[in-house]
Image (cartoon, rainbow, N blue to C red; front, side, top):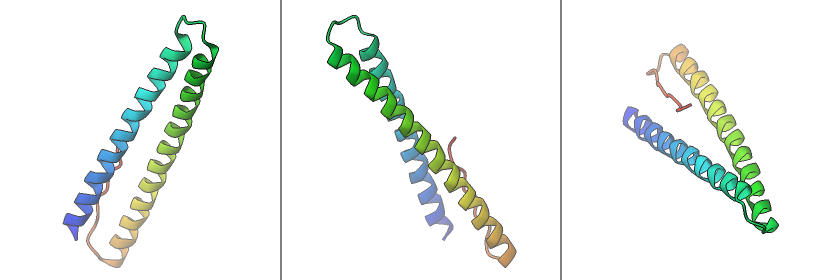
Length: 93
């Protein structure tokens, strides 16, 4: 059972790191498009939309990580109370 927990924790950590990387890339590209000295307003608006979407994605990513952390703390407390093995799950913040 601990091997499964370690595997899931590792997968979760990698997915969260990838999601934060995609956020930073999208946010950077959005600002580059929005601030570019080009006269095409449609392209600048698409940059603004990318920035807004990246900020919303970061918000929901942090909320999901927080909720997962709370659930893992509660599950560990319940497992400790029952007498089962303690499961240490850390979420990358």
